[in-house]
Image (cartoon, rainbow, N blue to C red; front, side, top):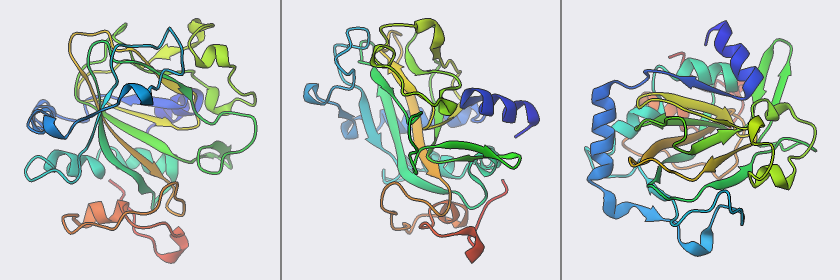
Length: 265
C-alpha cells in the first residue's frame, strides 16, 4: 500500500485497486457462478433493503450465493481470493498483521431493476466496537473491512455501491433524508470499477447501493475481514480444503502477541 493509497483510504474510507485479477481469473469465476445458478438465493419482497425509499426501490431483490463450499472445481477461484497475494499488503496496513476473515465469502449479484440498499455504516455518534475507524500514532485502525472482487464492470450510472466519502470520521449520525438518498446527492459518490478490480472499504464509512440499471449483471465477491483479536460473528471451523495461506486468515480470534500467524503477501 503506497503513500497515495494510504492517503486516499484515510481521506475517503475506501479504495479501488485495479487489475488484481487477470482476464482468465475473471472468466473462471464467472463460469463458476454460471454453473451454479441453482444455488443463488434471490432476496424476497418481505426482506427489502430499500428502507422504503422511492429513490432506492426496484422491481426485484438482489441475488446472494455462498461460494467457499461449492463443488470442485467451481470453488477454486473463490478459495484463491480469500488470501489473494495482491490484497494481503493492503489488509496488513488497514487491519494490522494477523487479520482474519470474519464473514464468509459470498456473491452479491444484481440484475437490471434490482433494488438498492439504504445507507448504513457506523459513523457517529457513539463508538461501535466492531465497525470503526481510528488514526493514531501514525497508523490507521479499522474494525470490519470489506473486500469486493469485481467480476463485471461498474460504469457511471450503472448503480451499485455508493459511499459518502469521509463519513467514516463523522461525529454526527447520517440524517434519514440522506440515508434514503432523498437529499444532498451531490455529496454521495458511486464507486465505479472494471472487472478484475477490487474495492476495499471500512464498514465505518456510510455506504449503500443504488438500484442496478445496466443490462449486464453486477457481480461482486465480498468477504469481510477484521483485526485478528476481534470477531463480529462466531468463528468458522477451518475446513479441510484450506491450504496454509487460507488457514492463516481463517484462524479464530486471538491476539497477535500469542504468535498469531500472518501473511506479508
